[in-house]
Length: 536
Image (tube, rainbow, N blue to C red):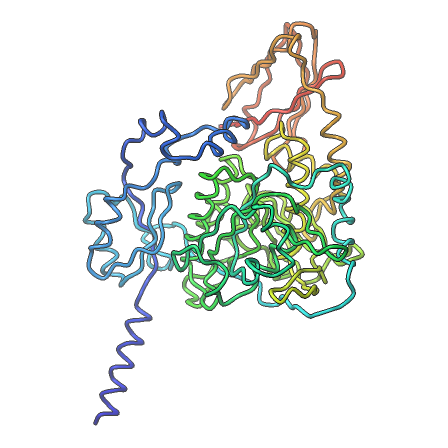
């Protein structure tokens, strides 16, 4: 009888565990929005404000925190656990029984509820996800010095020689655990320089990212940017400053991890981070009702990909691994137009068969570019240099190079850096779904960026308006130029229109353009300037 009772209790427990659902609760409004925007130091760091100002990024309602009173009320509701929050979406990630979550609709401040299980949604909304990085293998080797190939492949070492090693740039590494980073010799260089600015574990809700972790993935990823062992190993951005964030709950496969990621990206933005590296990908969950369909991976549907697009709009450069699913396709947020998605090649520059392939499902060319991800060199938590395979490593290797390039070209914005790198790549004129635009040449990108002379101050001002634009764009050249050439690019670097303007003919019809973010290059008599243009 006791055994039967125990069995019944176990079955009930399993039923209740299965019945728990995840959902996003979107809230109606925020407090003191205009006051906060007028006084941005109350919601952002000065570093963040300066970065946004430098790249003409507007501080808006999305920068204002979620109403904490609403969150407190949600926490008191029967059967509801609040797991994460997002100021960008003005949303809270909750877990509970379906009936208890639906009851939240009765709260006046709740606008909408979208379940992670799309079958539970009355109308189409966001859904599901999970990591496909299970085939990454690490083995110890003792052939030191071979890490040189992974930076020479894209001529990142030329930037180091020119003293662009990441100084003054800030990077957020959003990943799993970072054991050893706080004590092994391979990270002493970054520690001694005081370049680990902060840490946070969004899963455990504490600052420990080193000890109570179930994964060393973050350590391996971080080493490819910041690791340093004299004469044996140098990361691609050794002098940058870093924040280390855990959003991956390694033993589990649950959509709350995408909410943790958005929280981390929001914090990165508020701290003034320039570049985010995300060596994580989401596609399948333990609960298959949460898993993404192929159609979901269009770059605009999943919660994390929508977050990545906002992060891009906020001025950050979002470098993302393509995933390790081969022909099964790219995972989120690598599908996002705002992500700079990195595929993997081997040491000879050949496509690595595990690297996730893009498709027509993505609305923009994916992957973007590629670099070494097969048998990449890393530093493990035991301070041993090893090789590891996965786009988890091609991403940080490339991210460090981009950090150095942006350091060298501080007047460029994130979209312009992305365009320069695509244009420098080996198959820019013939991209494919395997390695995108190909393997970049950052030395070429740097030289191209340095050769771009902006219109001199003495030439009076260049005016491009309205921006955003719907139908006709007005381009007023500086008075010393009689005429000029306009080239319109997508944010992926694809040329969509070339036109001419003059002092008497200033208008260009853009009504046939699809909505989105474009780059406009204005050229006149040896001078040029590239601007970000939004078409509604």
